Image 1 (spheres, one colour):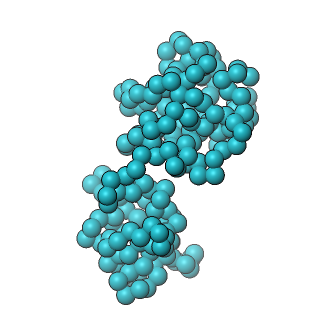
Image 2: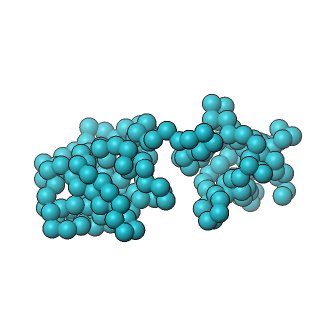
Length: 188
């Protein structure tokens, strides 16, 4: 395998998947990337990306995580184009199609006051004003005007609760306590 794609020592414990390689760009081995966030600042905030095998693994695909040193990453159309140190072969770049891009959470830019990364909300407990536990955030939905928390009650057979992530319903996000306080009832 090309020297640019030697095995990484190990994925960082706080690695977060932020995108996928969707193909090669140009003749010199640049990568075309699909970011998972509308604002791809996490990809631009670091020059070290980890690639992990596609899920499900592709025959002849990447067999282990690798560390890429990014020379340049920029927006291009509806995606991102990244040039990688020592990667100058279009065929090798094309062979990376489908691989997952991960970066350490510690490399993310610091969000502004009152802003949160989805990855930081997933797993937080949700309680209402009456201190009733509603469940745990298992994901978020992007609806256009705002996001919606997907909350799974402790009873796994109970229906998921959807709570708009807006000030009218979210009283506080207490990351240190791993909790979100909401103005919501279990049967809303």
